[in-house]
Image (cartoon, rainbow, N blue to C red):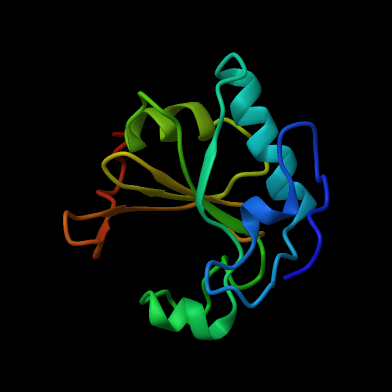
Amino acid sequence: MGTEVRLSTHFDSAEFACKCGCGRAAVSPRLVAALEEVRRKLGGRPIHINSGVRCEAHNAAVGGSPNSQHVFGNAADVAIAGLSGDDLYFVARDIPALHGFGVAGLWAHLDVRRSPVARWRYDSTGRVEAWPEGSTT
């Protein structure tokens, strides 16, 4: 694995590196900046990166979509102690660079895709469920 590189005040490349150990860690600077903004909005509370960049093999192994934003370095599944996935969504949804939101019990997927906003929920088994049209919760 490569050397850690400081990406911003609070994040380094190792936090975003593919969990398979391949060393892939090329993360979008826009994502890092957006996560810094989430942290700022929460008074500096630390953000834990559950999953950041994924190589194609690891993405397939965890059941990720073949076009997952994780593969492009544009996404992170994040958790903040004491907050639910819904709490994270309500903080992150107003950050202009963030366009992808997947909400789970104690974490949220956040991404900086360039397409229109996409929102979904994960059920208790990790399967994606449609976000009710017009719903903000």
